[in-house]
Image (cartoon, rainbow over all chains, first blue to last red; front, side, top):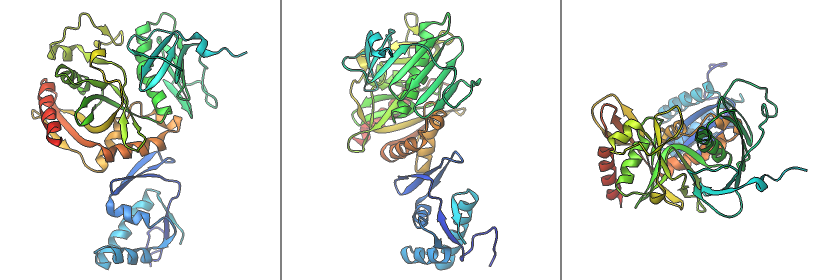
Amino acid sequence: MTRGNGITLDSVVSSRPDLVAAPMDDKLVMLDLAQGKYFGLDDIATAIWAALAAPVRVADLCAGLVERYDVAPETCRADTLAFLNQLRDEGLLEVHA
Amino acid sequence: MKPDPRAASEYVYRAYNLTIHCDVELPELLPGHGAADVVIRQGLTPPHLPGMADDPRYFQAIEGQLLLKIPDVARFWVRNGEEIVIEPAAGSLPGDIRAFLLGSCLGALLHQRGALALHASAIRTEAGAVLFAGHSGSGKSTLLTAFLQRGYPMLADDVCAIVAGETGRLIVLPAIPRSKLWADAAAGLGIDTTGLTPVYSRENKFDRPTPDQFVRESLPLARIYLLAPHDGDTLAIEPLDGLARFTALVAFTFREPFLDGLKRREAHLRLAAAAAEQAGFFIIRAPRSRFTAYEIADALEAAIREVL
């Protein structure tokens, strides 16, 4: 398990609650007032983001996604981890453990 | 006793679905009647806004208030979407004051009232309101004038306001019955500028009143065309998808830097996302090298007929 910087399957994460978001078709546009930056999420990212409202263990998040979408577990884990790390780098994620 | 600002009102106008009482004449606006939604009056402005210091920036903004400082023209204080106080500079020209009043100040007032104010002109078509968004010099007024020549009535030139209607469907408000034209664009459109009034005394830009071809009621938002001049030779009109629409709406928001101080970013995000969702969205890549307004108008007329 890599600790410290990277988010792993054992990390517990949630979305920052103070972001302003508005739906746009099946996508989401978000505003971080503190950073003065806009972010856009595509349809899949929007689905993952919706599951981050309350703290969730990344492995459980991936299991839920595999159940709902037609995606191989390996691919899902890799893509989700990459996306979560990107969110964290942008300061949009709360990492609890 | 506080003076009643309404007592000083002499002129009553209508713009952006607002009844405006003003103590100076604003010949660009349509006449209105009834109780004031907005009062514009001459008076004293504060040296700076509460909680801020005097600074060299051209504007200051806090929630509900904007102070605009234009050297040699005037200082303007825009408050709560309801009042604009003008303090003219010594020797300034009324036409120059009106250029900033009807542009930046009404733009700030629209932000305060929760409208999405875009740098766009708008016409009425059978499909609803069609907007041409673009930066200064991108050709939106020229394209608007080409459509006026073909008999389409207009809703707005330069600053276009979008609000949510009763059902959540977005509507476009009638603005000011004029089209602003650069001298070279007027020449391309075969319009003689000798009898027209310059918009701002330092610019070679003319005000063309259009009260006979002006829509007086709001219309549903149908389409937004973004004008993107380029250095190539070909004219292309392409659909714009997804998040690019939202990004464009932020980029073409009128006086977008006002939003932070006014604390309107959140409301703006919601309206811009709704506009991105509801409007048909296209980008017009027009060559700078030649006069393209008629070519573009031909293509758009055909496209609008197709969707009906």
